[in-house]
Amino acid sequence: MTAVLPGAFTDALTRHGDRVAVTDPDTSLSYAELAARARAAADRLATYDVAGRPLRVGLYATNSTDYVVAYLAALYAGAVPFLADSAFGPFELSRIAEDCGLDLLIHAPDAAVEQVTEELLADADEFGSLKVSRVRRTDAPPPPLLPDTEVCRFTSGSTGRPNCIEFSGPAVLAAARNWARGTGLSAEDRIACLAALSNGLAFNTSLLAAFLPGASLHLSRGLPTASRIVRLLESTGATRLVAFPALYESIVRRSSTGGFTGVRAAISSGAPLRDSVREEFTRLTGVPVHNYYGVAEAGPLTYAVDGDGGGLGTPLPGVEVIADEQGIRVRSESMGSRYLNAPGVFEERVDDQGRYRTGDQGHLLDGVLHLTGRTGRLVNVGGRKIDPIEITEVLREAAGVLDAVAFEAENQHGDTVLAAVVAVEPGLTAQLLRTHCSAVLPSFKVPWVFHLVDEIPVNSIGKPSVERLRRLLADARSN
Image (cartoon, rainbow, N blue to C red; front, side, top):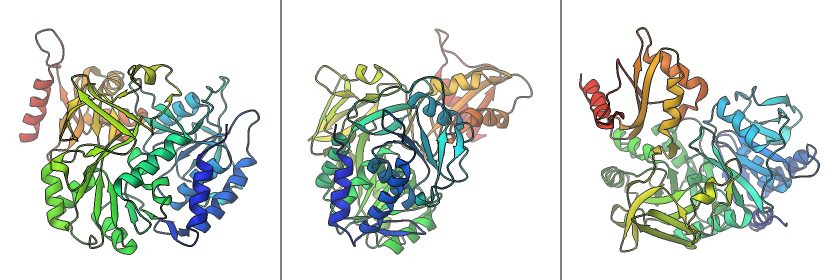
């Protein structure tokens, strides 16, 4: 089957040759330079080919021009890129490598990949600062990909293993085209992207979507502090800012106003942005915040124009949204195909009309989507979905733990966080529990707060009382 994405990128990179395509704090590449580097890196990848099937290449790094080069190189080499969240730890990375049958891993030089890789391919200079390693082989044959799969991305699964979503080339291209069309993205736009390219927020809004009309993509490194944001906006003359709600909340808390002169739109997604924060951000900076709703399995779904009354906007082109007593169900041209490593799970979430059950609850008011809650148990922390049951099971494995409950809570700023109340034997501390969790979980799944008790409070039928657990946290915070 002929791949779609290599041709789409080739067309864009050729048409916009001398325009700036992508930058980071150290490098700026024009469209022509990006094409040349990607082709050279693709030629290198081709030397590592495996017989009988496309090469499976994991990308495990933070945003950079080198990351974009590596992604395009995988596509040009006829390989399938697997975009792993750089926040995944060795435990989850090893599960991904095993579940998905990765052949190579492109990673930062200091990434902890020893459990996964067996050989550093030191001659891969075409990837800049990133390194290419051969993944440790297992006896199990890799699960077969669908014939039209061109990209794989991950979402948090309920089993502790990140679910690997297969996407066809047409689905990825449709996500980019419909986003550009639905939001008015043009060649004059300069996108300051503070979200990881492995995440749907950035992947769908700031990669191929930027390149199709000839816009430029500007990437930051390190934690997105207020000073870094200002430097990025001022140095690039950004017209769009793409970030998670936590960044906008940080700007509001610090009353940061510098660098926003040229920004015409700030795009937020991953978790609901409170109306008070959105309004205060716009008051401080003069920049409207456009909420965007999407799910990893179905791509970008809605976009809010001029606030849309605090909702998440109206459906993008190629998207159908149903909101009723069954929850929010969606059908889009950018739908994933299935979970490679969880057979049947994706299919169970699709109704007989081909609509994906998102697990969110909400309603449509004058065509604008408003969220009201979750139908499932996953907790949305900073745009990442976390299963509290998984965290509870990890805590219960720690020596000295009698029982544990992980659940959604709020910090002092009103942000959603993951909390854990743990019944322990004498001598066990919160720091020891944090160390235990950090050894087997990525950093974003480690509870924000641990509260230690002698016994977990339960309700009348013997189940943990979340209401009483929340009260314990509130009482502890006020003391």
